[in-house]
Length: 76
Image (cartoon, rainbow, N blue to C red; front, side, top):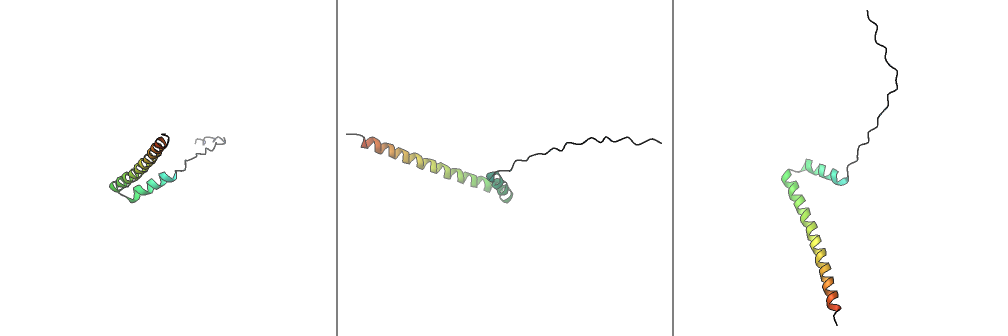
């Protein structure tokens, strides 16, 4: 009969892993992907990009109007 091997009584180091908390946007996109099909998701993303582009154009237009007013007002 063979004796059981002796177990080492070494202390194991516990590793702690930190998982990143997803951002609100990431979490919202995950929920969106579960609830909507791919086509709806694409349409919604395209619509949002259009809104952002319209805002950018409006800002550019306002800045251009200001510059034109200043150049006209600056003439004698």
